[in-house]
Image (cartoon, rainbow, N blue to C red; front, side):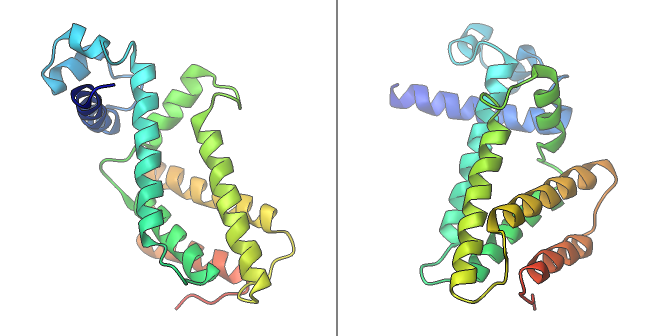
Length: 195
């Protein structure tokens, strides 16, 4: 792909993200994307064949952005506990976003498209995050920063808690204080105290 093609595709994904955040997944049409991007229908179809394909690109970009933010924040020499807390703080930012939040659209996308475990990007990222958290917890136990008998199970429980908070935040509202309490609880289950 040429530089201009990559830039155009990135532009479309960024603009589409805002439409999906505002309207959800089901309500968005290719015409909505054409309108917000101010491009021709043919110009859009050169890059994406459907809203499904476009939303998958939006999800991928979102995942890459979060991973880059997390990687940038993980300082060399930080303890596993500090790295875990940074991960949880990044997740808190996502949970607390009132606008520009893809949670509802993501669930609509998953339910409507009946994705299998093999082609489900959210499952893939869940597994990647579980591996990261398992590693952090395992290292934390080795270095005696944490106490945990089953790092993989703890990692999955943390991710299920975070996903529940994301849905709860959209469905009924969650305060920052409530999220902080959940983070304290998570850290407490690993034998760590959050100050």
